[in-house]
Length: 107
Image (cartoon, rainbow, N blue to C red; front, side):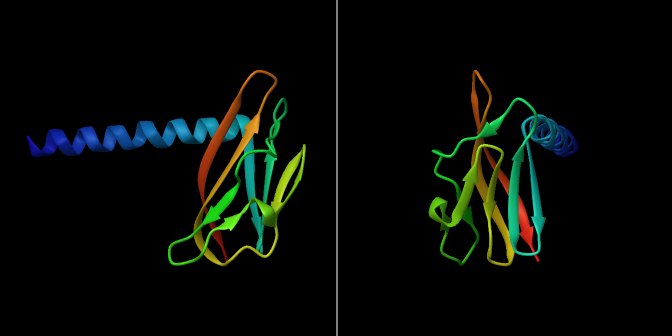
């Protein structure tokens, strides 16, 4: 019974990770260079500037959308706090918008 639960948990995790990776590859790219985080939408997508963009990290105050710079082709956060955090944003195509939350590591 226990091995069945472990196998089910592993299968569910693999499915979840596979879905997130496939989604990320089709709609946006996140790049961390030093303390700058850049989100670039893939072809056919654009940045949703109205979304409440945010970077959160345990034990730190959140960085809200006022600290981001937006254009239709990228969202940039300069001087991001170092460490591991969760970046929340959204990209849109002509017919839908897709919010995302992705883990980032700022060195």
